[in-house]
Image 1 (cartoon, one colour):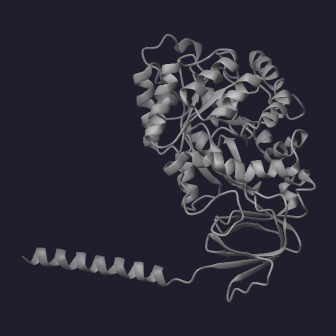
Image 2 (spheres, helix red, strand yellow):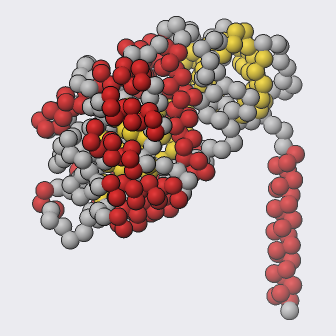
Image 3 (cartoon, one colour):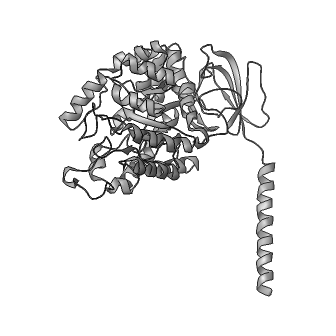
Length: 447
């Protein structure tokens, strides 16, 4: 009886402690920041809001006004006439692969990949990319630690391990490992790449990826460049297998994105209900019209064979790179003319030097778009694509990619006007004077 009384006393005390904690949090004073004297690009409209003042309460924007604002006891940051823009986003990013050499994928382990990803996450944020759609790789723990404020990094909408057929783009097994009794190699067992064949297995693996916490899933519907054993022209997965992926994604109120380059494979993917085409450099007008009519996004990248080209260790990958990037110059103007929804991403892969050029890649879009169109693409347009994750979208408190009341306080203060000089985004170290994510300042060179 005394034991029961002690237990009851403990739980009563525990409940009181919890109640006190809740009461204390309810009474806590919000953190308020006022950014004064800025010209605001809101992520949607080309016309700037001149001489504005922006109030941030905790992690949300609570006021935008051309009238003076006061924040008793809050922090004040004088923007000095600079341009305030939403935090940038990258719709095709690989946090666990952007800075990892390809040799690590072939011979390394997940511990090395994780160790390399932690500083890569901070570098991504410090380039002004406050949100990424992580579209392949086991990045769930990185996202968890970023969201818990254990390590610095961008918001992440994680697709988890990309799913491929046997012999497909993500089949990284070495030649001596084939034929195999199982398609679960080391990377499959660690949730980095997943292989699946047939409708039943496709459904099972897709469900597992959503169980891991995916916002959306990523499949390979066609061949790739960096992979060693498949060609770009190969269509991967049957219509029924693609439909099985879509059925699972829709049951989770989310969507499927597909790595693919060519007409036949994209047309099948669109017919199956896939909503985001990754790359697509070799698409014809017919296929792009089909995408436009179905509301399918073109998530492509400004990859051309220039001084920033990807470097591959094999001749076959180099040949495929030249084939794919030859289509980039035609793809952007045609998709723009047809009104296809276009997202911005970089697909920086297996090269720290390329990852560091994330902003430079964004600036390259000026070859086909106005600075306004580019900045809108990398802010509110990308955010619209990410919203297709529905309830699987991990950031529901406010909109991303916009400077409006109620939006997340993900902000960049640019020394200059990128709507007039887009090259400013190519050098964030020197041109981004303030970087804020979720109301927290990560860089401030003004004080």
